[in-house]
Length: 303
Image (tube, rainbow, N blue to C red; front, side, top):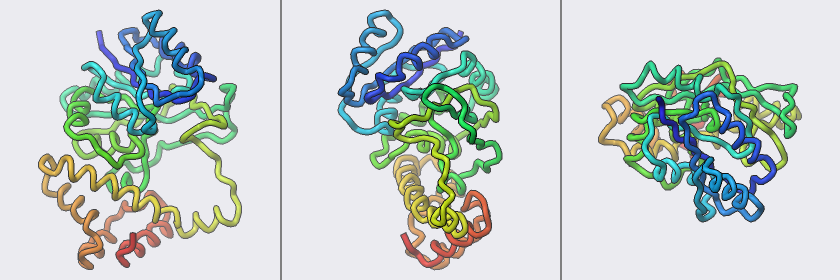
């Protein structure tokens, strides 16, 4: 029987959290434990969590307000050892086979660090489908692309104990998104499995911290799409993750990885390095103009 630790960070989530906890309780695999860190809620969230804890359905504790990313990473450090670990948002709704489907994929790779993530079924606050759906099934999952784009949505992530062991070796200080961090670790040291199917209703509402927001196709949106201006911001965010990864795991990197990370971190110091980076075919997710813009940006040594 598998043992799975479900990690949830909460903050003022009283409106939808009961539905989410019930959907987790109703998973087809029953050997799960829900471990919750409250990030300083001021509504009724803590009372709801205490009621569920009194009924033996979860364990929770209160922490200081440090933001969702760091809150989730703290949970990975404090949870009990398990075979598998999964992140859960407070406001989604899980199909009953969500964890089962993930484990079926992960079981094939028990001997290496491995992370599973999936597509999303985007719904509104009433769990009704959005007319526009998220589809991440055709992305290239490599380190170059992942420097600019977090391609693994946290609420779909399930990972094995081998990856958990790597995660415990270093605690990053300048990480905003926990899912991006775990995703990069899996790409660097193990394997990422992507499931084109979705087993989660990804609820969108007015209080989402991060979520699916259909773009307003105005002039600004068109210009950004044509020349990829948003990639300059992504480049700086991505570099901050690489800096943390290099600081924490340099001794565990192979030579090719170490050279790649070093060049990303120190790209402004050498014109030769900047030229080399410009020949990375997957430095941009997609689109010729986007790739050309970010490579020109790198060539100039700008941050």
